[in-house]
Image (cartoon, rainbow, N blue to C red; front, side, top):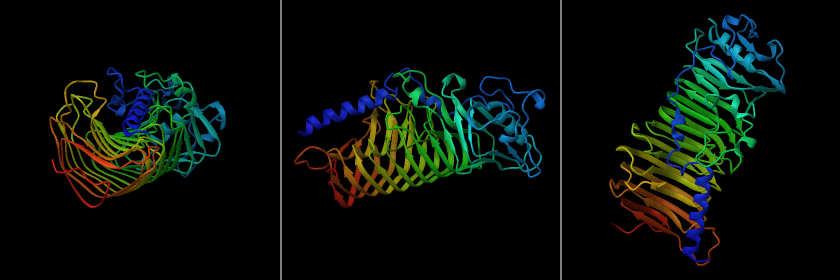
Length: 434
């Protein structure tokens, strides 16, 4: 197969993937999902039903002397996977939140079915409030059970989620209803304004929309998460960050139908360490520049990660006709990328359906010690904006082999509007000086 034919096939493949994810329609405002939603008051309705005030006429959370609110102790709560326990779980949070002693919500063994849950403050309980998930918390299959477009909404500083259990979004049927440019499907775990919080040792599977969305927070740790969705599930980003300062994602395995990790605007001081990604669309900065109020991204470190069978590897993507902002001091290093179509890519023409160029200034980006295999001829692609060319791009010690279907293929680096330097062992060779 000739290189040109391979390019055409790859372009069609990526276009189909993008259409399936519903972004090609310029009227689709998916990135609005990053947050900026009205914070529900503690005790607000869950799943559209009014929560009983003060525990008056509804199921009461049951706390033992140790401050544990065990949902299985609530009246009529059954972990059989079919009984609706939305109000029991909601009331357990409300009672824990309004406690004056250390509080923990316990999701024990069993399958616990719920609609929308709002875990909101302000709380009187000392921080952290713990949510221990041992069993499986299951989202209702019907998207109508999530009026805000989110399943578990956490709005409270100092929350610790752990336990080794599972959040099952039950999204398989919902994915079939997702049309290009259509309404976004409900996200599973939405963490907003949760400073000094963490999620550790949790399995998140089959989310209808984003698996984890972390926004408007600082000092957050995601550790030992296992996130899994089908490779063709639409818009199921593993972990999406936006308006975040000082966050760490580490020791985590992610396989989805979209970006394993997507880092949105106003994200500062982010560490991604020891993450395994695949299938999916890679680890991405962006997309940036979709909305007029976006702010700079800086100080991002992605290191010691392995990506397998992904469309992209290490990626930065920005939109046409963007506001003027900067993405700077970004490092991808010590990565293994196997069977990717775009192992290393800066794409400032992401969904270039508008005539004006991107005005996102990309500067101070390092790709270092990255090895693996490529399904396409282009291993390094620096496709920058002609309005604000990339500056300070350093590519060092990149070593790839070709594993695509074409014969007699020579791997290459391709650069446009990029001031880049190349060094160390380079296979393919870097771009010639501009």
